[in-house]
Image 1 (cartoon, rainbow, N blue to C red):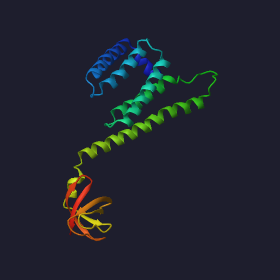
Image 2 (tube, rainbow, N blue to C red; image 1 turned 90 degrees about the vertical axis):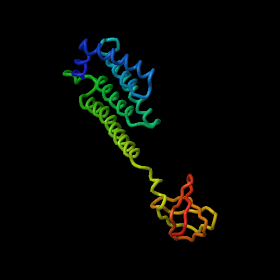
Image 3 (cartoon, rainbow, N blue to C red; image 1 turned 30 degrees about the horizontal axis):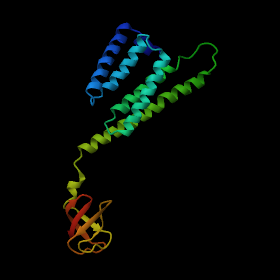
Image 4 (cartoon, one colour; image 1 turned 90 degrees about the horizontal axis):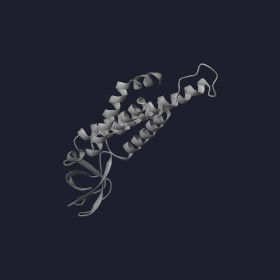
Length: 207
């Protein structure tokens, strides 16, 4: 905490944070989609704390509230984890600013309890942040992967029920169950080949 406040109390650093945050926030509002408004808000809050325009305790609360909002927004909207990562960083910074350094003399809260609160404040957002990083990696990996539907055409399925000609029944493709139709009668357990996909329905023919 003291190291953070020492850095923020530098007039040059706090002024730069304030200016960068202000311009990034304006750019983010006028040109959304780049995430600069999130970075701008964080820099602006840290700059206000460093300039003494916002108390350390109030600034910590604002950072934690901002982090919670960003984490909620990440859960409700698809993305690559930018808001989630920024959210848990805000919560960690806010928690560090809220908890003072351990006192050398008698205090109302024991040092063990204070350490436990500090550990909880750090470990929860850290765990959430790791989850969001992992989820973002999976989303990017899934987007780079070619659609599985293309590989279905020409693939072999197993009929899980009798499918009369022109009717719709169920077939199993790998571990997935799909609706299917055919121009020929299909019997249960028969192997069929996918020749076309029309929305959620596969058109198949006997293998």
